[in-house]
Structure formats: structure tokens, C-alpha cells
Length: 204
Image (cartoon, rainbow, N blue to C red):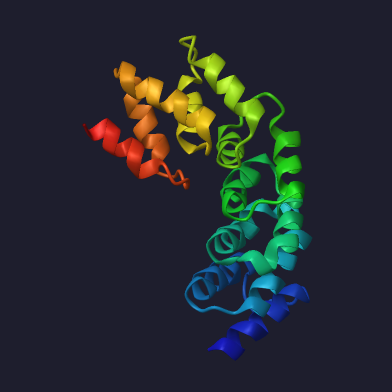
């Protein structure tokens, strides 16, 4: 099966798939999600880049596969994948870089988001997980208003590591109210060391 799938991926990259490319990529994504094969993953990442944004729907299964299976050895390749993505794809890919941070990926996310954190919330929340100071300052300011992006600010505070974000989180917990719902939801995908402690505070 491994040889068979490897040959199919090679045929795809050569532009001669034996079946419809979209069906084959869906199958490859499902297969390599369960079967570790770094070489195939590299080949599929290169294919993702070569397909380009105009074939976004076709390459979507590769994107999910890379998010689930790529590791630190694919860092430079994933940075190229991110650069080739449109904003919607980048919003999904951004979560991978929270676990695999790099200067290049952070700059790319900052470039795409600018200060429009609410409009680009998926990338913004990845920046929060990377400890972006400008985003945290925006989140703090957003809590003083009742704007539509208040939930993004609360998610960002939950996901951001460090003392400043934790101080804001503790203040939200102390106040209670509806903000607690968004804070809890924000902690669901937070990856820093204080998550369990703050959830315990909320529980009490």
C-alpha cells in the first residue's frame, strides 16, 4: 500500500494522475494521516505549493494533512506552504506555527493581519499563542468596549502566554459575567502552562 500510494503521489506531481486529482488528494490525505511517511509528506507539501491558490479546493486535503502530520523537520517547508496560502488557508495553517514558532512565520502572520485582529481572528489567535505584544495591547483595549470583536480579545487573552495576559485573565475571572464563556472557550486550544490553573479558578 505504501508503494502504491507513493507512486500515485509521484504521478500527481508529474501531472499525470491515473484518476481525478481531487479524489486522489482526498485519498492521500486520509492515508498519510494514519501512515507516517516523511518523504511523501514533503512531496505533498511541494505539490500543495505548486498547485497554487487557484486550485485551493483541490489542495485543501493536503493542507489538513500537513497541519496534523508535519513536524519540526518540515519547518522551512511549512513556511513556504504558509507563504503560498490565501488568507483563509493561512488562518488554518497558523495553528501549526504556535507549536513550531519561527521568525519567518510570525512576520508572515503579522503582515497578513496588520492591526485587523477581529477580521483575521484565526491568524490573530495564533499570534496570541506566540505571545504577540501588540495583539495583547489591542485585546486589553477591546475589553473596555462592547464591540463585536470582544470575543476575539478574550480568546487571545486565554491563549497568550506570559504574566501580562494572565493578569488580564485573572481580572476577567474576578469580574465574572458573560465574558467567562469566551474565556473558557479560548482556553480550549491554549497551550501554555497556566491553562489548568485558570480553569480551576473558573471552576471555583
